Image (spheres, rainbow, N blue to C red):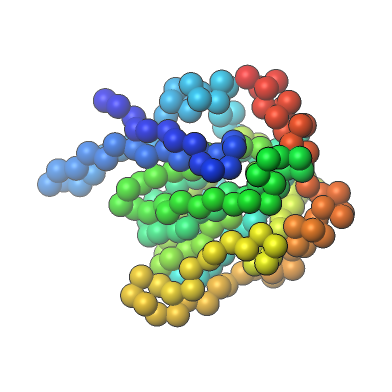
Length: 207
């Protein structure tokens, strides 16, 4: 049984995984995570240290979140119920795509997943009530190493949806912490952003 297809995103260090979904009158089956497929591309295992699950109402935006490198926090993310727009932002100073972003739809139809390497920013927006997102993480949550960037920062200019699937308005809903997060420029001035050379060296060591 083939697990699925791993494809690079526009941001280096991020990939999408599209599984094969098998269905019959009983329902569906898929392999949403394959260590061997991911390892063949990364050159190292996903060192699983924590698994998270969030349930979000329509319009909720979570992120942009990232962690200090080392050790950083790589994430493997999928949507179990509902649908989200999942976004990867390059926050690595010196990267060829610094300040750029890429997105993919994660939902309970195609069952895609996203792998986000250490040093990259991650965010998503729920497109319907009850969207349930599961994350596999390479390190435990450590608040002293965790940071955020304003997901509505006009410099990054993420194109978050403003209407739902039925054409109705969908206001963006952020936590106080995310709404108060610094802009990309402010985070750079504060020395919070990861360095591209350091993150690449750290990934090489892991391999």
